[in-house]
Amino acid sequence: MTIHLSIVIFLPLAAALIGVLLGGRAVRWAAVLGSLGVLGYAVAMLIDFDSSSGALQYVTDDAWIPQLGIRWSLGLDGLNLLLVALTALLWFAATVGAAFLGVTRIEERPKLFFFQLALAQSAVLGAFLAQDLAVFVFFFDLMLVPFYFLIGAWGRGERVAATTKLVIYTLVGSLLMLAGAIALGVLSTPSGGQISFSLAELAQRPLPEGTQLWIFVLFALAFLVKMPAFPLHGWMPDGYRAAPLAVLIVFSAVVSKVAAYGFLRIVLPTMPEAALHFQDLMLILAVLSIVYGSALAFSSDDTRLVLGYSSVAQLGFITLGIFSLTDLGAQGALMQMVNHGLVVAALFLIVGLLAARAGGSESLDDMGGIASRAPVLAALFLIASLASLAMPGSPNFVGELLILFGTLESQIVFGVLACSGVAMAAVYMIRMYQRAMHNGIGAGVESREICRGELALLAPLVAVIIALGIYPQFALGRSEATVLGKVAAVEQLRVPVSGGVILPGAQIPEGVPGTPGAPLGPQDPAREPTAP
Image (cartoon, rainbow, N blue to C red; front, side, top):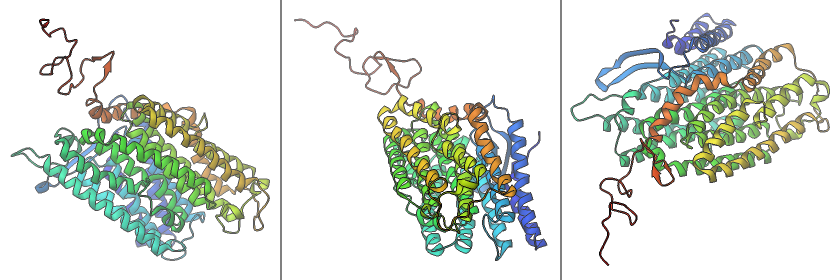
């Protein structure tokens, strides 16, 4: 099958531009059809993808700025296939919700809104599909532009202050990553060689460990801000409160995954020694994010912030899996990126439906008793809530289990500490469900069943969650080969020891007794007996 990834990236933007030129309701239809086209491409790629190979497929590789060694290089493999599909599905749902179902009411400047929403989708797709570091950085930075306008112009409450804080945090992180990307490309260029930002070539041009360390810090700060992770999440509470709901769905469910994906796509293959050096620090931050996010989610009455802080905890789990630096942990992290995106998008849609039945309020204090006349809505909410707390039978259970197994395999202390986050998730999600659906009926609550349009938007997301829970191998089988390749660079640096014997194929550091050039140990058979 011939699939041009450049078309996949720019299709939503081109459709939105056509809608802007036509005007009227055409702008809504054009935006929906553009996102539907991307979804069609994503389904075709899922069907056609060769999961037996870890190599890139549907590759585009053309010169872009040859003087700087930058190429328009795109490709699809097991690492980004599921994330591209997630982007296509959730952007389609958010666009339909904003255009026709009132998820976000666009009464002023609809042309500009749907253009910015399409631009954001193109930027996210470009970041996921980029196989050149400069192209990735370009799209990673471009994402900030549409969200600045989407939140600042169509947000609510203190939207200007929230947008300013978001821009300051993410712009600083993006500038740090830009500096790191330039340094990575320039310093890895061999003497007399041609500079290149190709991710494949950078992985074959290892830098000295000292250089890797400070470049790793630049990338890590940018990614941890975008996720967000504790303690770099300061923009999140105000940003989540202010963002239009349709925008918040894609921002929380998809955009945060670009940062976690960057660790797997860029950092581990090109800076393996730095990843191993900073492993403990990253695991500490991951555990702190899990505990802190879970605690704040439990104490909040704002439904948006319950989901916002739960996302901090879930991104902590994803970081834990990545920096377990094991095959199981990394594969669980990738699966959890997809699981969290699906679940949090469904829950944010449900928050909108609950608010519409609670007089516009999104506070748990103003809800209660909504399930009395809305059993279908209550059932969908319950399924999404149980998936969020990783109930057996849900895809989140598989993702978190892989992460914990991988972490316990390499760093047992951090794995044990992370288990507390699983218990805390059960508390805050059950609390949110019970207070919204089954407590005493709130004063302004109008309990009514979900309508057909709302059901058509929400039910497919819940259906995908159920399907992945029943057959998680659909995701795991397509990602396994590529994920193993990304972790391999770090695993080669480990010194596996069994019974005091260094296993074959291990890289042996200097000074290990029994190896050439090492000092002889007291029990070394090569040591000559000494005279009494």
